[in-house]
Length: 338
Image 1 (tube, helix red, strand yellow):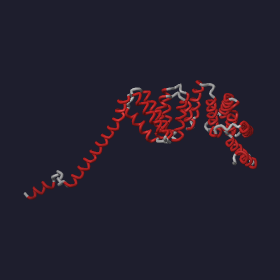
Image 2 (cartoon, one colour):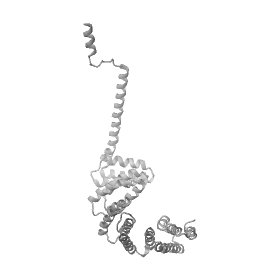
Image 3 (spheres, helix red, strand yellow):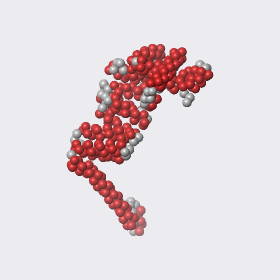
Image 4 (cartoon, helix red, strand yellow):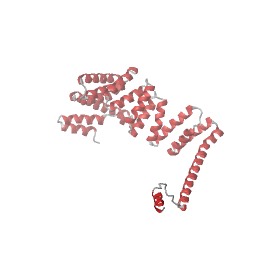
């Protein structure tokens, strides 16, 4: 009988029940209850915060409440209290108070401006995507998108977004150009040229499109996998010449610089040097006219349109390649050294 009892004990696979440590269990349960109370309190606070805009909306009405929210955001932005303005807009947009969709759009447009001015470019990027989907044909909106994109540096992740948007709005020239630019940056020059030609078909007299096509053909000609490079060079110079004509004589310095830069990339230094020298003469003449007429102008705009330093640097680089170090040093001394 003792052996049978021992065998039953040996083959009994039921888990042995341990006595619960009552103090430890009570401590765990108390911790869980505290967490539940905190969550309930947090939810209650969120409900109160969400009820405040609803209360103001009932008191003022939709139109006055919208005007009040916009004015408060503008004044907070003027006082450079961007975080508070952003929080206010986020709460109003999240609550979805307005029946009029145009009011929600204006609030989201304001959110983009505030995030951009506060240098919160990640939030600005997330908001500006919505603005672009609402206004895919607006050039200022896409200019703002490009400004924000240059701050964040997230170029590669936008091609799918832009391609999907272009499929919905196939006649948007800014979208065509942006998709083409991204294709060109990734080295897909044939795809970029194809998209540029679609934009050119809709706007045949846009000098920028001709310049972009010329640059793409130039990059394609520099590629080793291109079979007929001479054909690409001729096409590139043809579009550069057309760009030169469309841009007009008032922008001759810009046109001469771009054409000289193209010739320099092709190794046609005997063509690039006279063009660079013409740019330097034009810039010097323009500065002298401004000094005589007393035209101070906007210093930022004058700096952006002045191509003297870029031209002098490229010209000195050509002189160094040809072995004329003295002339290269002289150009840098005359136009770059302060």
